Image 1 (cartoon, rainbow, N blue to C red):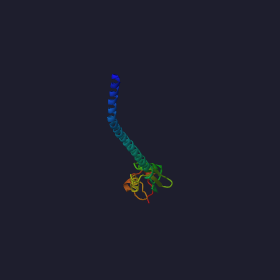
Image 2: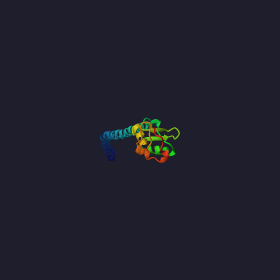
Image 3: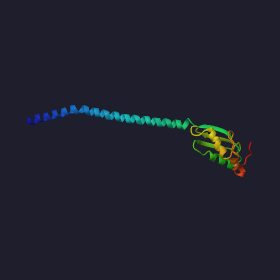
Image 4: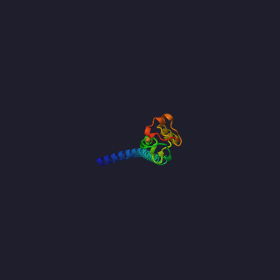
Length: 148
Ligand SMILES: [Cu+2]
């Protein structure tokens, strides 16, 4: 009998502890859960923001233009295309036959005017920007195209 009542007392103490600690434990778990959920939500928001930024960067910005650039030979082609191998320009092609230059670029990084100036700086007159005599004269003699 004595051991039985002892057992009961033990249970009673344990039960009382449970009643006390369980709500605290539950509140604690809720806080931890909310905290973890907040972190997961934040991660999802950051990931979707990054993803939409990638989409905008990849598709919305490029502009394609085609304009006349004076020149003569394959060396001119190399010179013009190399000059446009810069930040903001995605694609550049100049044709010896047609003298037309096609450029695909990001207008937020480089302007159309700057593209014309860059080509003029290496000695080639463009539809919008004439090379200086000094820059024209420093071209290889094979490349001295007829100026308009
Ligand atoms: Cu040339």
